[in-house]
Length: 303
Image (cartoon, rainbow, N blue to C red):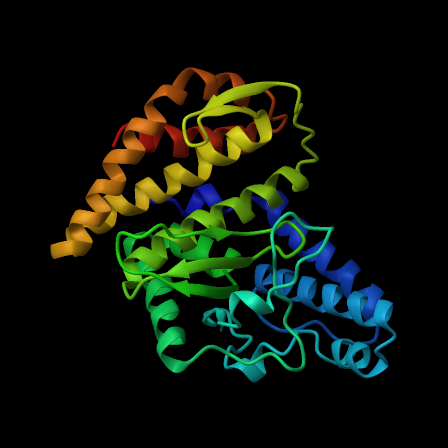
């Protein structure tokens, strides 16, 4: 099936426009918004807000004024235009330059006046990964375009080594991930983390308050997890499975074996979640969001 309707969710679109406007008004109400997709503006204005807030707290007037004057957080300067089909902003700052803060469980990086883009080779790898997701399914392509706006590449790994990736709620649409030389593998991880970002936005947009006292066993963690984390896992891992199953026919050799092994592992992990997922969905107050979560979960179970 084509997944574009799954990600086309009006409450998320409204959230992007409304929150972008409010954050711009806090930093500089006189500056016009950056052009382009609302989801792209939403991701970049969070970098503007985070950077401006940090500069203000440090008393750094020059940097604060830079953020007030750059509603795209310097994305165009880094080779990523404001058009609807703009490629992601690709960074490779090194793990040691990530920010570690009590405000976030995981490290992160904020676009700023001294940010340098990744090498042409890494930009090409990431653009090819985003294009691969779109070629496999237009919906997955839209998901990546809207929720992998900034891609921060971390450590280069060999195929088969463990790849770490994460996203954080304070910088929606920004992904941090290890990478191999294979665009199809990077695309898989962009789909996964973009899925987390989309679901965070969707839950916020429908004002969902998920009861964290209710727990479900997560095969991925090997322990009982709060419903919020369980729902995230039962959404983002199935998205990776759907992508992987579709891309297999375009792979060969070691890459195909790697992706097939991954899909087999995920099938075994997902299968035991069927009953608990139905129960967890009852905690989601919005029927439109429940339906989307159910569709993706069931599609992956059927692979």
